[in-house]
Image (cartoon, rainbow, N blue to C red; front, side, top):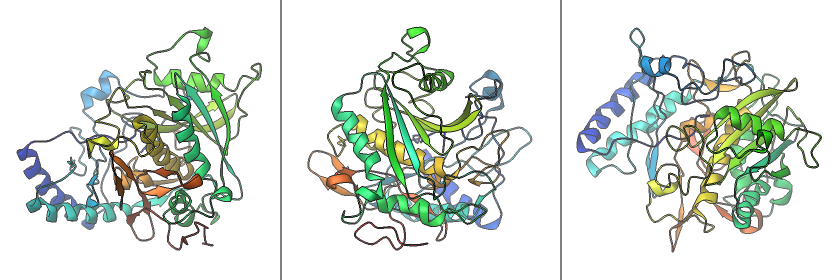
Length: 417
């Protein structure tokens, strides 16, 4: 979801018992009727309904929303191959009802595992309401060009790790890798998500251009730290300034990534979100973009795999960069299937009456993982055999989480739909 992943909050034995009851109740509820998940005010934990070109839109963190007590959780957990999926949404209001909130922990006691299995049923039932609503998608034959704005102090190693992941999405450079692959993971978007013209999500992804901001793109040359969500948008807007030697073109079929280093503080980052995607209008052109922050310093136990495994160090030796890769994958999967879901736009693929998107249904689930000495965990390979850890995505046909698209051969070549 565009509000990013949210860490489970309870850890008590009473909480475990409560979750067991809620899991069963939620599974029964979801199988009986479509969940009445009330639309959140724009931006409360999610940016998916926010058109930031609207002066009244933005991340709503105001007293009114706090008073209304809206909550929106999609908490899931998995620990070392044990699928403990809890997919839930909760919204609380005086005269409104919604699906029960389910909090989760990294691992449940043995006597709770049966209840955890019922959460998979809930995920599947929730998934049946993930539908296409007529909005824009990033589809073939267009190429999804990815533009990266590095803000703050990023090391060469960190950039190299993230850059290699984005290059790994380019199947023209990765059709020789052994299964499971980053290309095969992206195939989930390609094979199962189409628009009203039966055009599938584009399989063509290319890292097109990067800008190293290093605080210099901030308005009036000032260092912005902390950043608000309006600041994030303003930073991206400044990257389109043609007066600069290095600038981004404005492409409505592209994805723009604003990545902040570990020393940059952003509103709600590490508190309510790890990443988000949204859209905004820049000089008359509507564009889709995502924000992802480096959590290594501010919340390594919140927005990284370290929550499940305290020894996790990042498969490529950088906790922050490896975690940013994970979040980029999540947000890009949602951005291509639901890029412009704002106040004045039709949605792409989303659960009706909610802000749940494809990747949300598999949030914090990693599937089969490989463990190496030194806390290195990975589940896919990319460019030149580079290893990465990415969350699974939702196979809307089978209504289940998957790490690779059906029919993806070992060479990593995408089959025809």
